[in-house]
Length: 124
Figure 1 (cartoon, rainbow, N blue to C red):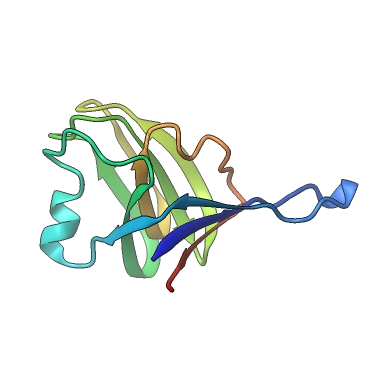
Figure 2 (cartoon, rainbow, N blue to C red):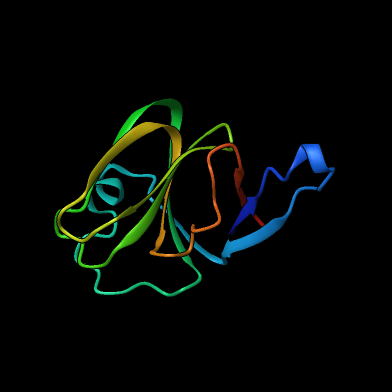
């Protein structure tokens, strides 16, 4: 599984959509235990890593950084469309937005991801 970013491009200038693979190693946090743990207690993650939290429906979702030792980029997504992108600091950050998918990445990975872009989990 990989995580692909598709920028919205500039429709006015006729630019097409750019595709970029943000992560080639994606873990799914799809159980209560894995969602509760997230990246807590991890001292590092590989540059090509993402932790994806898929949900059945879109609603307001919170992320906290308690016991998370590394800064991360967090992306809230609804129907593959990015709603919010935030860099969260270890131990201190709390953020929330509407999402049916939340993705956690190493800090700096989502620097070119903007609301309105698409973020897609692809298999194969």
